[in-house]
Image (tube, rainbow, N blue to C red; front, side, top):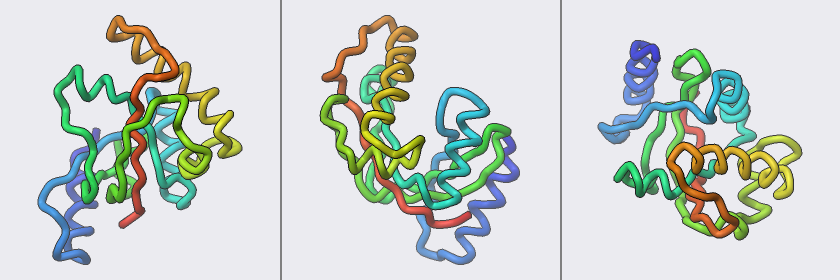
Length: 151
């Protein structure tokens, strides 16, 4: 990851937003460089305004959940900063209760719930294999909505 691009983006953002918080997190979407590039592009275009993550990983790693007001610097597949997002809502729901609206806001594929399930089920299954647990349709999913603040 190029820390320089992250630091530079955050400093530029703070100059135009003096009330910006002191803390942020920097990360890339997905499990590959190609996926990170594709999803970062959707964020920059304003099509991706939500994401979903595996609640079980937060619990296992004793990581705090995302929260309203959290600022995230989104990285592309090369680890370069491309955008700053602010979390505007967080909800934990079972996999099979993720809504059509949330799937649409994720901005991926044809933006349908069917597409969302088709891509997220194998993604979550792989994460569960890595932690020696089983996937089922009631696993808790962290549904996060965000607002593009800077690009």
